[in-house]
Image 1: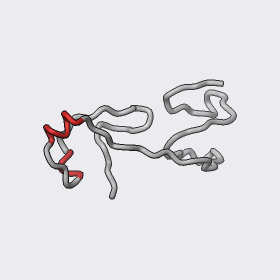
Image 2: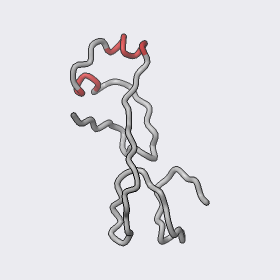
Image 3: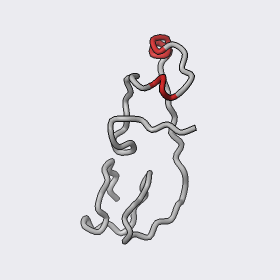
Length: 81
């Protein structure tokens, strides 16, 4: 049992089965959805006071954020309705 927080090449590392969170794009793998992960956008009261009223995703364009690198790629958030 390996518990790791990085994307691995299952075939290259000799792993027979894996549970992954997120999109799987490897065409040579059999993928079966077994669940769903909800992600939440959270902020402290202090940050919300600094940002003032948030009415649209654009209001968060320059807000600082902390991300879990294994789940969110890149240095920006993509928000959907």
